[in-house]
Image (cartoon, rainbow, N blue to C red; front, side, top):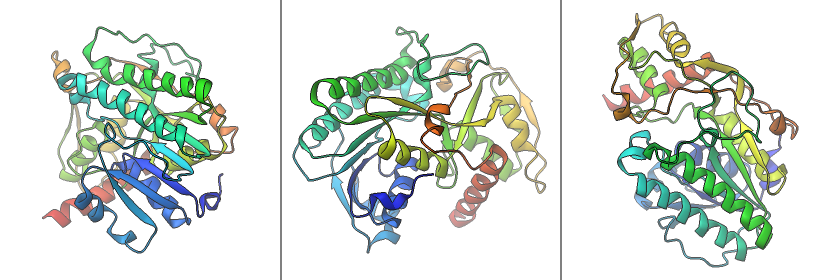
Length: 331
């Protein structure tokens, strides 16, 4: 596993800084002696989020990722995680989803081109593979069956284009860019009202409400604990090969939504929770991805010395504990 001390005294720019992954990455870097520049749109919000790091070398660069100034600010590393993450927004605001991805990534690569950086990492997604239909392992050279005329493809198709933009900057400008394709990631730090499926399941467990599935829950994928995601990102940033992409997931968590719902329903002995399948015919309104089997293979990443440490049930126990604290604090 990577020794985070390798980033001591390095200057690291992080976009998407106030998101779940951005926060966790910044925490780890600061705790190990790095100097962090966090790209944020709302300084007051950022100062509140990072209040316990007032005496650490953390500075805020207030800008939209699409409008950031392109200048030499002496940074050593760039971690580009700014992105639209709401599934509903992929459908309701598809143009913005695409523009934020492409323009933002272009700006960050331009910034990388004129700064003396050692490494650049783009946080991509498992969704670039489309909707695999079998349980076969998905490796980094797997093709995609994305439908470009499906408006929800605004997210995965823009991710694919950003990956290719990284490859183009490697080829033409020798920017040391790498890509990491993250599976669905969660853990402490997820907001109580988060709309993603894992948060909905956790809220049901906390509130003693039945888990309602609007589909039969056949989609299968792997998951990743937030600390393992941070480890994967920093491993690829420091040790990954320029111009390469790496899958990041805990392969042992591969299961269907239906199976995951039952895992969560059985976790909390305090509240009796059942799983009810409604199979709503109008699922498009929720922004769900098509039914898929995303069985990511991670041997390429593991060859760099990385391995996941937290399984799915433990992930949910930690998530539920943290969300329960948020709920009681809010009350």
